[in-house]
Length: 137
Image (cartoon, rainbow, N blue to C red; front, side, top):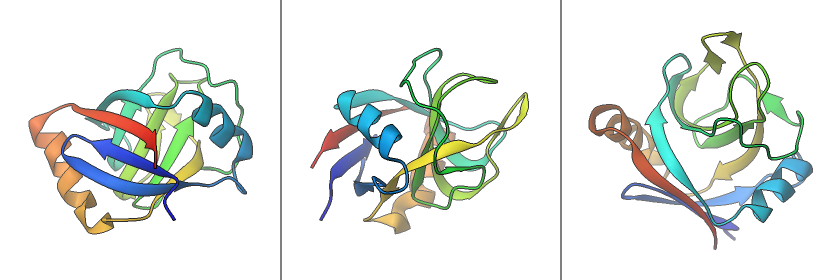
């Protein structure tokens, strides 16, 4: 059963929270829902889109963090060396910024239409920023 819907431009995905692995991050994000932003293509991390959030503070530290999210995994970088951001992997990723390697909290996993992820990545790369919305299912 899907816990949330993730919309990026014309793409829609079912998703689940990783409550067992990242309970604090999931709880903090739920309080911000529905959450809206814009996705742009990453610059240093490989095949991913990211939501730059500046100094937005979710009030969480590291939990279930990784520098190598798999396609369909969504991570939250809570800020520190670089700005707060959310990253959605659509292919191979080594999460980084101009300051070097970063790690983000894997807190959401897409559960449907993963075959469309490469198309999503190319859309953001070649057509520019896309609206993003996270909402309860």
